[in-house]
Image (cartoon, rainbow, N blue to C red; front, side, top):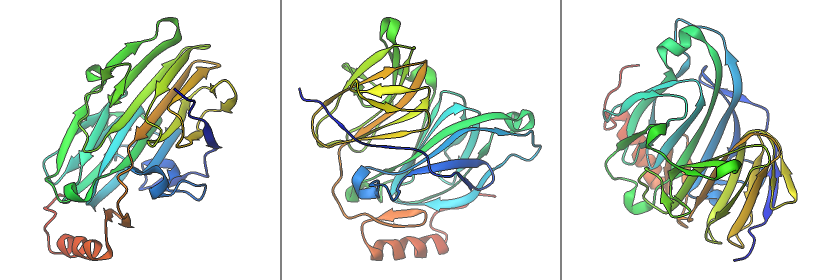
Length: 291
């Protein structure tokens, strides 16, 4: 098995607010090699690095907005988020939990700080990914997966730490999320000096986001907290070693290799499909959700 080498290590860009509740660094799509095609099926990644929100009686967040053609995956590291959508999905995403919303044919949704957490305030840290859907599934029925941390398979690495699997496989252990295409998504929670090896097919688009700590990849490339590591599409195996207690989000997926035509909250395969999405939204076919 050959080594999957690092293509580039990308530091976070300046943060911006999405609504008033999410202060994010955008990594996908970005100007540094990371367009939607390069990381397909991962077509957007926003990272809310550690940020302190003051107590608020009115929860901060993002009001009602539509999506079609893809899935949103929210991973909570610190803080709590509430979600509601027009397909009936919803709930609270607590620390360590994951929300996997399949917008597919279209939903309205809103997401905001959980009410009781908002009243207390505190450190907030999250990742939101948009996962593309193949053309045959873009107009499938919306669905919602609430994945609690206790459901995730945790692979014990002994004195190195452990890996918790959200989706896909690690050392023949499978995560709880169901996916439309082959996707691996997991958190490596490594102790200082801890090491883990990962193996994914050479053609899978693969990256790592350092949530906490500092790491060395393949014994040579250093990546600090909040940095994004993009791997080459050659070789299958890479190692991550933590130089201090670290949390690293690993994503790897098979490219769908279909046209990607995004416009705002919709990601389809053609301009005509985007126009249809706007028409369907404007005529109420995405359902109703109170703001």
